[in-house]
Amino acid sequence: MIDREHDLSITKQAEVLQISRGSVYYLPRPVSDADLTVMRHLDRLHLEFPFAGSRMLRGLLAAEGCKIGRRHVKTLMRRMGIDALYRRPRTTKPEPGHKIYPYLLRGMEITRPNQVWAMDITYIPMARGFVYLAVVLDWATRRVLSWRLSITMEAAFCVETLEDALARHGRPDVFNTDQGSQFTGATFIAVLASNGIAISMDGKGAWRDNVFVERLWRSVKYEEVYLRAYETVSEARDSIGRYLDFYNRRRPHSSLDGSTPDQAYFTPLPIRLAA
Image (cartoon, rainbow, N blue to C red):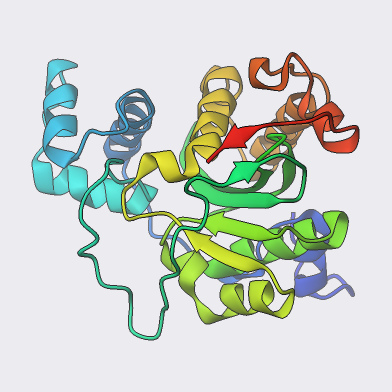
């Protein structure tokens, strides 16, 4: 896909193909077939039981005939970027130099497009491996504004996804993420700050704070990803791209009174959502 002998620079080729520059140079450590199988099980279980931590997930896996230690489950959860989602005291300290911003959406009435955007990353299993999907979502209309796939969870592909959304759709009043290092890093925060966007971050492990993105992941996985077995990253990108186009243009949402995200975003009627 990337031609290292081409006159066009690798950076430019990555930009045209909408892939992270870092993923072109990064050589991932191999993951065993056994671990990939467990990770696919974990992905489904986490989607069904988002409150389950490593101890409960180990038990759920055991009930399915998969014997695995709790420490191994925790290792795979870190690799996948998943955590138990529930309200708990904010005791986690941010990385040195990474500022954590308060959650701004509690009690806010969200009534129009581009008032609040949200962003998150999820694990996408393939036939032999996995990738990560990052999405910027308009909170009021559920419209996917931009997205990227990457073989790593590096910050660069999140910055590119954010910049693409801003270039295509202007800017929101508020931008909400979780407290992941991809979103608290200086480069990502600088893009938001330079555009005058208020920064909001979920409480640690609080699933309700970014619930609409969690609902998007459920739709993407049950209606697209789990029905496929992508052989390559390019195949995954093409197929997920087709689904997200369907999701925006044709898939009706009961929460939007049967409208599609595109209809709600481009021809908005009064929308009343409490964050």
